[in-house]
Length: 128
Image (cartoon, rainbow, N blue to C red; front, top):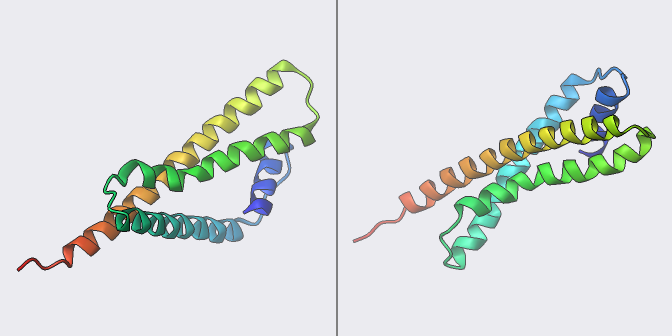
């Protein structure tokens, strides 16, 4: 994901052309599947500890990808060598919005996958 994030940021901020859209779709699919699997795993650990408050934890577990992207934007900003205040405002404003969008998207994937998982495991319980 690091390499793809670098190429996407380079295409947005340095006017380079991004042309590997099929690979980007593959990486996006892997991101969605990984977020769902990790969130279900953490949800299972939480439920085995008899803690049933899983909603927000599953949202933030999967959504932490957006935090990683925002932190990486600081590393990438050093390479841009910008010196104007407007550049700082525009760059971090747009990266903050993009990271928030990614946080909300992956958080939604995490909650939906945990909801499906919890409905499946609690639906199979037979009470006699």
